[in-house]
Image (cartoon, rainbow, N blue to C red; front, side, top):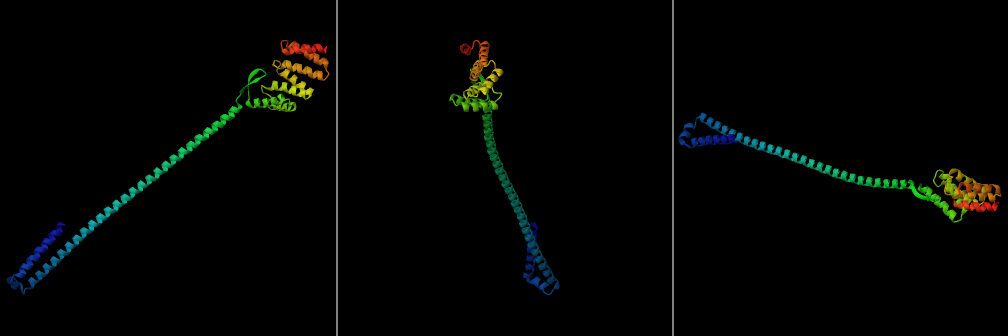
Amino acid sequence: MQQVRSGWRSAAMALSLVLAGLSSPAQAALFGGDDEARRAILDLRQRLEQSQNATRALIEQNAQSQNQTQNQAITQLRGALLDLQGQIDRLKSELAQSLGAQERLARDLTELQLRQKDVLSAVDDRLRRFEPVPATIDGRELMVDPAEKTEFEKAMAFFRQADFPAAQTALSSFLLRYGASAYVPSALFWLGNAQYANKAYQASMANFQKLLSMAPNHPRAAEAMLAISNVQIELKDMKAARKTLEDLIAAYPQAETAGTARDRLSRLR
């Protein structure tokens, strides 16, 4: 810019000198027919035009340089802003995805906890079905399987209703399914009684004898021996009946059933 101003000053001074020379009549007459003067003037004009052209070119170049610099700066700034906006958009997207993932994870965790609770509840229910429960069997407190207790009580309900065929079927099924149950001695006793009521004497006596062989100290053992004597009487085997009654009195002298056996034995004689 300083060069432009200097060029303009030089051109202005040269032009002033030329004009001043032309305005003086003496000098005009002096250079009027001189070719050298004309050449000097032409040279001066040429130099002035060159100076003007150089000045304009310098101004235009400076303007173009400034425009290019500004355009480049604007382009760079615009690119930086677009890049920053892109980063902001990506962060927003990642944040939204993260929040969505957290929400899905929370939902999945809640569902898993509910399922786990349901599974545990179902397992507890199933375990409770198999956990032993207290039961009173012929005056004794025992722990038995819930299913066993249910089946035995169902069979005994038939017996109490005097539905001896149904009781016989239910008790027989019980013994087949629960051969190692604590209910087995009692089931044999009541099955023998149901069979006796149904006049299945041989099967009845066999179950009473099985009870005595399995559990001779069972609370129903003396009653089972008395029931055997009853079966023998029905079968007209009085000798065997008397023998059974005598064995009952000898084995269980303090039992209430022993007094009944003594009365019956006196009648059989």
